[in-house]
Image 1 (spheres, rainbow, N blue to C red):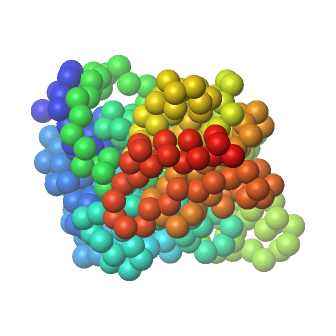
Image 2: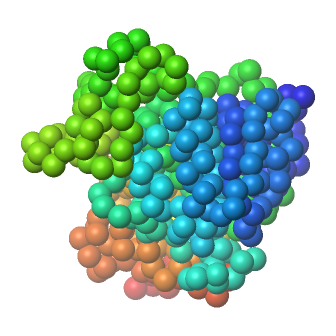
Length: 381
């Protein structure tokens, strides 16, 4: 039975599963972990309806390996987890980045570190999502803030993964994952879906990592006769390991430059009341929803406040942010961690001089009144 379109009351995690199936995901491997388990439950129910495969793995390491193998086999694949499981996925996530394997990883954040607070929201995986695996590597991280956006950004995650041959992380907090909201689910036939660039039959002459104008090499379709060596070792265009400095440099520059080359495709953000904002609030996920209400209240009270919300968290939308931030005298960063996004904002703005922080690390979401109080405090300075 196909996905039912139209207005539905959905939980965020269920919207994620439906978005994945609508995007063409036909393989899911995962291990249950709070607060993401509803994604696995819904995928187990939905995938058989469309001829897909769901498998519960023995752990998160195996889950990540399974979706990479499925993707190399030509299938759109996804896994979902939370902080502790995301940590376990990192080595294989690095392999996916190095070998340029399209896949989607959902991380529904909870309190940490370690096993932390499984049922409480947090936003402590900002830097782990960017730098969790070792070495320099490309990664795309999307941060939806509503149930509808979870559906949309999950589809977008698959499109970006397929278009750019890269793992994509969808990062949202427990509160957004367990929200129940009305969602207008579109007819799957109306969606614009992206399929990866497949190699033409070139046989033994095939170069699986050949540099191209768009920085994205064509991928070998299993059974088409193209020989392909898929190693996590640094490799040349032929896929075989190399330590030749010139080859290594060419390979790494293409890999790291791939997202910059397609930055217009990757970057997404929301700017609310930013044209004349003197006080700019930066927030994502559920914190951004609190900030949005606070900004609207501040405006009614005569304070020129605005909100910048990164939807693509990594690579951070630097150019639009800097253009907006250049007009503000003060910036407030609101996040449910000890200050991870703040570090990036301070880097971009040349220091912490005009930046104030709102941080919660107690397992409770930031409330609108907290953001409004900080806006009013900064306005008085």
